[in-house]
Image 1 (cartoon, protein in one colour):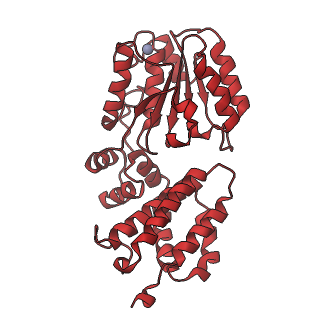
Image 2 (cartoon, protein in one colour; image 1 turned 30 degrees about the vertical axis):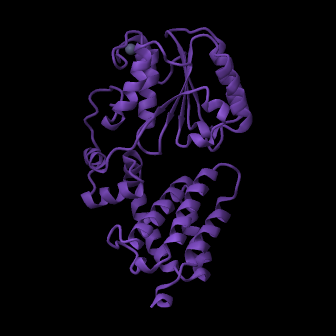
Image 3 (cartoon, rainbow, N blue to C red; image 1 turned 90 degrees about the vertical axis):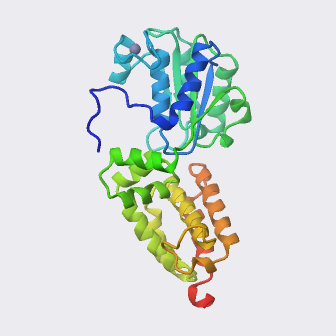
Length: 330
Ligand SMILES: [Zn+2]
């Protein structure tokens, strides 16, 4: 870990998000910042850091390009309690944001500001709002109460109500180029370079997600999974035995990983990269690998939506296991 956390300053905005930050600052400077912003991009690229920096900048009493870090507002934020800052996120152990939470936010935003020039609400992930929560929020977006900025953070804006999306100014955030992502990881983590590269690859290029996987030891788990996936090809009957281990991992993480794994298998199959884990990948049917990847992506979007994940997983693994085994190919 990088322990040089230059006193207790807010985490620095990663360089690859400079363009997103710039577009936010230009909106402020040109006085065309909307009441609602939608910060969108794939998981694990640092959107949360960017969003926190935006919140701090909006609330700061003497801001420069970024929040000053010294004023009453900045100090309150660092302490974790700021009366003009609101957060809407799923309650502990829940996956969705419910309507009561959304109404509470509306009530909070209707109050006058206490310290800062505006009130700011941060909603993440915005796609976690259930339908009634989203509709309750919509009222605040249609008739913004006083000086407020609502910042929605989303991994997948296509899952938001069109009526919500259309009322937000979009600020896109992009993953870094691979070398940039790797250099950042190197500064944060002491793992071997090969492991870091593997983590970044597995995380679809999201450095923060890769770091989390490295730190939480998921990479080892994924290595085990990869061995199991390989063994499952052509052997659907073995699925019941492997299901339990796969089910142990957080569903979004698992689908991300299964999506990346099928993508890698597809690249190996098409000779786009040399075979790293699937011997004989070149003889697997590319169309089926592509479908497996699409299914993993789709299933990731269904997490938290009330559909039983174990059933989705079983179905996905069954399709994977029905890929032709090596001996059938030889
Ligand atoms: Zn400040």
